[in-house]
Amino acid sequence: MRELAESLVAEMMAEKEEEIRKELLDRQTKIEDLQKKLQASERRAEQGQSTSEDQSRREELQQQIADEEEAQRVREAELEAERQRTAEDSRRQAAAHQTATAVIEEESRQAAAATPTSVPPVAASASALTPASTTDSNTAAQGKENAVVDLTELDSVPVVIREQEVEWPRAARFSKRKGVVIVQATVDTDGLVEDVTVLRADDDEFGITQAVIDSVMQYRFKPGTKNGVPVKTYATVTKAYRFIVR
Image (cartoon, rainbow, N blue to C red; front, side):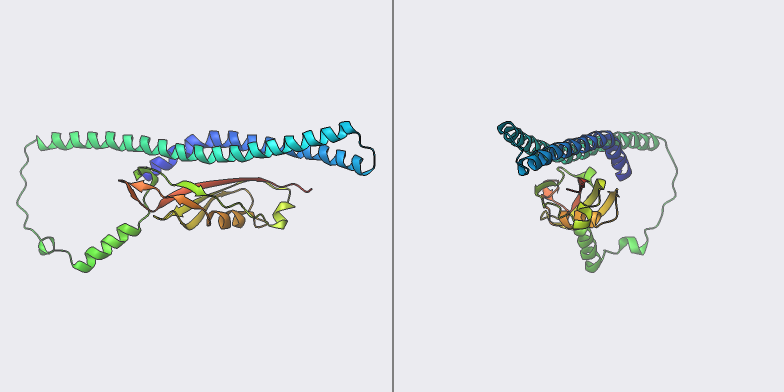
């Protein structure tokens, strides 16, 4: 069941994620070009070669840069929302697949029950007649309580309610690297992150991956639910980056 869900998520997300990732990189390139034009205009102003038209152009460039950066942040948020929706869709598809399989198995059992068979009586073993000990019951209950519930079993998946900006190390900011880091967070019943596992890291240098892990550990989620009750489960977080030297 879990393998099916993971396969569905991977197939449904791959194309959309690559499309948005390319758009984010293209937008970052546009921001860099605008910044270069702005810097050139500012140098002319420092040299006393600026006109009123140049001043208006600088203000226009500053506004364009601000607009592009805001659009980039919105697109990153849309990517995460798309991932949440895809996870929910895959859960429904996997559940439908499970239901169809259960129907087929039930029909097979009914067909087998309709066929007379002769089965010799079997004496019940002593262990089958002996109630489980209180200790064993408590241990089983505790294990179930602490278990991580798969996304395919949820009513609702975890949703980010407080995000922590990534504090990129200085070495990373001057590394001229670009790419994405995708991590899987284990979210407890209070919406806190217990653990972070790296699913993809385009660069494992300059502290890039660790910076993302440190950021996600401080996230706060609305926890996922099963049968209306908050449960421990997983959430995926994607961080795109493109570093340039200014």
